[in-house]
Length: 346
Image (cartoon, rainbow, N blue to C red; front, side, top):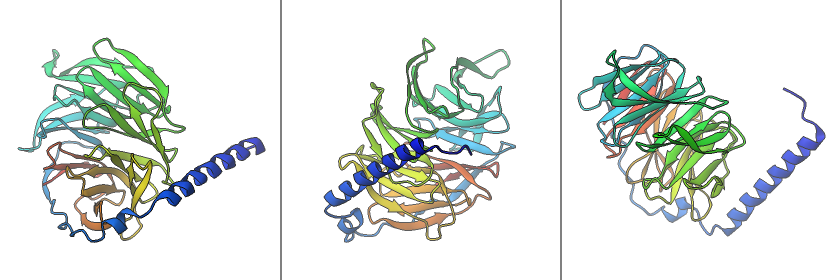
């Protein structure tokens, strides 16, 4: 690593001192903790989701999964260079889409189910129309979104015509898919953007980054509304709370956290019983009471968000879990792994 000069070190120390001052100020204003306030609440049942189906079809590490708005279909992306659209009710493949680059890192299904998007180490985002086929019978490519200087780490549809992406060049981009042009292009973080989650009304979104922070954004603006500190390593995943008043995050530092927009700070910290796993992805139940976090050791950990306790472990994968996605109706959880399998938990 290059040697840090004295001026840069001084700036780093000044920033860290300011962050600590913010944390101390927030802590001084907090009259109680979430755990204390919810201590007399009834316990929730142990997580009952079980591995009901294994979706087999990929022949390499599966890196990402995302559900369509119908809660039935999901899309997965793998290093075998394929996107597969699945019918989760029957466990059948609906479509297989071959990619130009095998290094896919993120996938997204439009809420309508009409389009899928993907991207990764090819430094671009590609959009396919699943209802139209080309001459070879494969879903027709409608857009190749270029102009990134880093890998594509996350993408989400606002609707069939608009898409938001986060990438390794620290940028957030908004795209008009009908015109194929960027409507916004700005630096979002001081490090690679790793995760992105949209609010239910599609008006705001949250991002997580390797700069150890998470930020709240308005889809109409290029300046973040709030910034959240706490994690000590990369923030790999963020998930909007169904109430719209906060979000959860999962990190390499072996913790997950819950942040509240109104108090502008972290309100809960979740740790596995044995601190032997970094978290790669997270999801919240439709009630917001269960927090699910996937680990690099191959298990999914469940937490009671209100009482801030570990609720159970879901076991089944044989290698690192890369991504989890909960269906919009809250009935099914899909997980992807380096073991080349996609599992459905019901």
